[in-house]
Image (cartoon, rainbow, N blue to C red; front, side, top):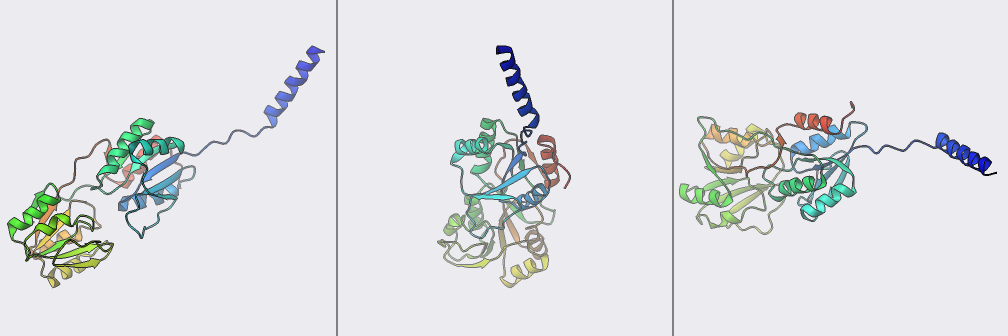
Length: 277
């Protein structure tokens, strides 16, 4: 009896093993920290690959987001610890930091969190701009130094392209200085006494940038060294018109980085494997 019972159990177990469906394999998931033009391109390229899932994450500061391909989340993570927890809970296989080159905290948080979670991380940093011999650049380390450079130069009509949330330091320039502020959204509040706001989103053409600077009689351009082609036309226009440039240098970077989306896709191929689109 005991022998027959064991045989029956073994047969039933074998039958279940044969007829049961194989376990489903979860596709690799990639967390893409967005905020640059490269992020949208990467989301589209990765979402087009079968067998991989990509989630683009935005901090949510820009109200009108350009929604990329794949899944999207908006909001913070709660510091490096919250990000590490989110990575683990969502079974993330790799993290791509494609935030803006001047994003301050998130790249450091991503580095700490990825190390804590034991997940590979790469940052996408487009090459910096470099001055040509005829350019009139003053390179400064930060916004306060840029405002000081304006005071020292005696600039009177300034084209300011540093972003709507970083206008405060320029409120302490010469009261006679006038600013043309270009921003995606309206600065609230506006700390500058004499300023005109131009709401616009790039990329911008060279003819338009030249006409803009000429029509507003710009003598100084203040910008960040973001690099890339989308915003390079303003530098070409400044060069052609003899406009001085106050260039804010990039902050130092940490961890492994690549310069192009092609390199980022190749990195993903090495880390998680990517099927052809």
